[in-house]
Amino acid sequence: MGDVDAEDAAGAARAAIEQALRDAELEWESPADGTYVVTLPGTRKLQTTCSLAVGAHSLSVNAFVVRNPDENHAAVHRWLLERNTKLYGVAYAADQHGDIYLVGRLPLAAVTPEEVDRLLGSVLENADGSFNTLLEMGFATAIRKEYAWRTSRGESTRNLDAFTHLTEKRAP
Figure 1 (cartoon, helix red, strand yellow):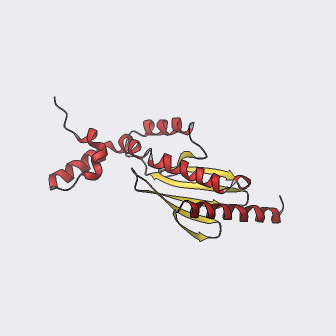
Figure 2 (cartoon, one colour):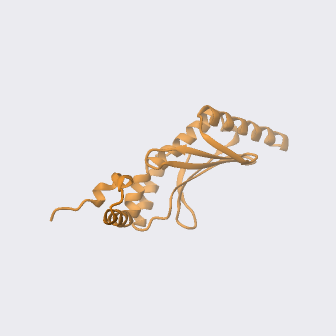
Figure 3 (spheres, one colour):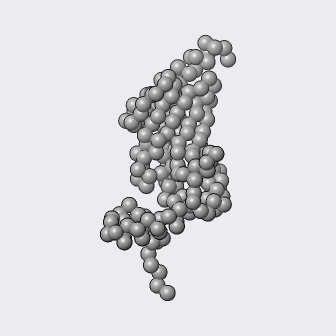
């Protein structure tokens, strides 16, 4: 593909992305030409920040899911790998610090407003939908400690309600 064709494809991809973001009424900014930072609202995870970057030949997608688990690494990574077989357009990955992301790459020729919407939907579904499971698997001890600390101080534990099964005292 020549330089002019690549520029045309990149321009068309940028236009498609911007249309998709406007149509979805998402919060976003473009800190540099061809780079977009999108805020996806969630229910379990309050929001997921997703970056889209138009390159010379492809659109890359990157979204932070959760930091490096404190415990149970093998089970967390196995769960992520098993989930990867069911994902659309993205896959779970870990960075050099062990933090978990969703990443993907799409050829510029495939970037349409509909495809961007589908890709962002996949990011949201898999970042937000997996959030509590990943916290339970990788941070159960920290959740229990946080719950104990808050209850000892009389503070609200409302945002830990999803983890009641981890914090309840079990009868002997």
